[in-house]
Amino acid sequence: MTALSVNINKIATLRNSRGGDVPDVLTAVDTCVAAGAQGITVHPREDERHIRPKDVTDIAERLKEINSQKTPTIEYNIEGDPRPDLIDMVLHTKPTQCTLVPVVAGEITSHTVWDIRKDGDLLKPIIAALKDAGIRVSLFSGTDLEQIARTRDIGADRIELYTAPYAMAETEAEIRCEFALLETAAAKAAELGLGVNAGHDLNLDNLPLMQKLPGLLEVSIGHHLMADALYIGMEAAVKAYRRALGQQTT
Image (cartoon, rainbow, N blue to C red):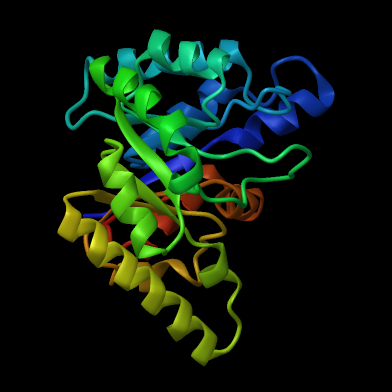
């Protein structure tokens, strides 16, 4: 089964636009878990425009409480650039997974994958420190096979395939082409012993085909799921995305 990890950044974006604690990120976590999500993802950016350090800690405590009473456990995925304060935050909270993502100044959302040729020496000791703390490490990745091989060489456990080119494809030919690149990349990762995650601009229309991606372990979805939740509610949206992944819901 491909796990659904719900990115709740947008809940914090809405809260921060007004101040106070409405909507509440912990209530969003509870709702997603109750609807059957297998994970929660956050991306605490340096500018704190959505998820803040206190949220990271509060969510870790809430998931610890939930997981003390629940099997299988709900995974916690913290993603972001490997700046010192973020790595300290991750080492302190000890999530299930840390997804390292390059950040470009002024970007609205992440849209750049790692160049391991250039960044591998920076990432290797950080990956080692996270793994020594018992944290699984995933790197935001494109479909370049050499880069995927280098990702294995610097010690990462998984890649998260950047799916925006696939999601933005319009014609059937474009969709087939982009999905074929994802398939080849996923197969290469599996051959190398890397786990495969995926994310970015996945929605109810393009998600079903992702079920055919070899060895896909997890998708992380935020923006489109939250947009759908505005119309049909959070619980219904989480269940709809689970069904799009082939999961049974009640």
